[in-house]
Length: 253
Length: 244
Image 1 (spheres, rainbow over the protein chains, first blue to last red):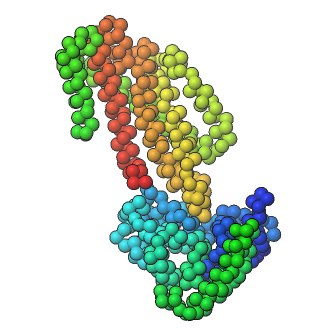
Image 2 (cartoon, rainbow over the protein chains, first blue to last red):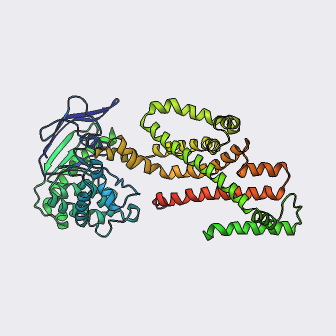
């Protein structure tokens, strides 16, 4: 699904959270979004998920069409937000139930998908019995079960330890290559942003704008060695400069 | 089961030891053996009182629980109704139930419904308030997530708000179980001839101390039954709570 965002802004009372954002994402593309905290990344996401209306003048088009966005993109918030009274499979099936899809076929699909998500044998476990990494995989699987071409992932690995996080990144790339969805991914972590993306978009400090849009032409499939390769470090330096500049601004503001 | 029975047996033993050891006048505290013997001698009579009061309290409790949860869901769905009706609920609770007793019996006659109505009156309000509190405590991000899946009000209510509020609902139901019993007993004081409340009054007026204590034990049995039923339902429905 092609996403075109043009001139999208948002005011909260007197605070200008987001200034005219323009961004195009091609079908099947993996785009990561970084920026200082409070730059309006989550505001942008909430608008893409249809939970928040952009201010007049901005437009968000999916495949060239405007219209209600609620239920049209698969949104994964920062916290896993799993329901403690549902087991792994039933948590992943939640969006299908809400959509009113036939139960048996959704269930069969979920059981197959659980294997790809490393949840085999845990289908009947409850969230509170799982590790942080596993909970995050369940939340991600729930997002994949909600079959939309555009996925919005808001710092999905933010709460994980470094080791689990790098495993989850490689695993996500694997899943992405298999299912080929368009992904817009928020992160605070520059390594993560470069490692995953076809393009890294850097946002400015509030009011948020697109400061830099950097294509990442590193070959795929990518592995952990990439993180120490010279071409990776070069990109990282370039992005760090941009991010630092913005972070300093938000401190002095 | 054993864990619940042991403290009760211990209490009975203490009771008996105190009566014998301190040579307490049976007028103030009769021996548990005497009370038990009296209950055994008139078992059908006490069993009848147990069943009558239990059905009154249980009916009132069930109505209170349903109306309590139902009204809270309605209030959540339609805040206008909440603004109009909740103040009436609150005012209703400031009037002691005993003031209504005679009216209720006048309306319903000396029926099961009259006692259940009084038990209901005491039970619905804590359930309404706790259900509302449980719903208010739901993480708004959780609601946003369901909305992003395209969920409407009804689905959000069924799949998120109601289950999230269950722990608080059960807290209120446990409280309401003993209130329902109090309501049923008070209801029986307005001219009933059967039930624990009627027995208590008769024993009191006739100074039948053994019978008075026996009635208290039957009342405790009714309360215990209701409480156990709520606890069992809670364990089945809120199995995920202790792990939170």
